[in-house]
Picture 1 (tube, rainbow, N blue to C red):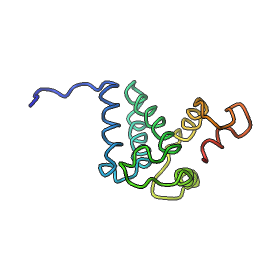
Picture 2: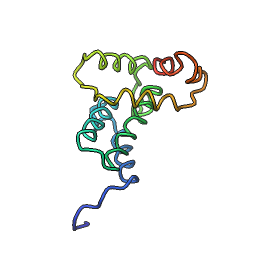
Picture 3: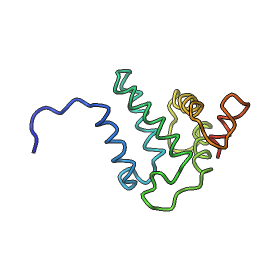
Picture 4: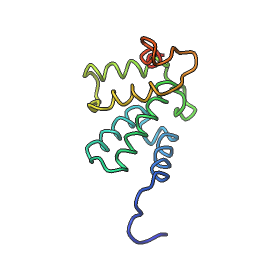
Length: 136
């Protein structure tokens, strides 16, 4: 057993913690989207040091994956339909549901998704490309 002060976080340990939680759905209440939004909110409240910025960036990246490929972190359970994530995001934007969407989260999510080179979708430069990709 290791003793002494806790180690400072690194990007590697942050990534490992995310994957550990996301790959065991029961540990996050079988709700990856809620886990990622709540984690983003906590990092947002903690300030803007490099690790909090990195955590927020990873939350946005994983959220795009959860929305576009809902079975990614289902742990072998039946995945929700692709439209379920979009419906939940719309509910959050309307202020409905039990989660509160952090003020900067959706803008960062759309900006991230603009940068993705999604096959079979119009490019981000075309009208509606990002939103069409979001509402798969």
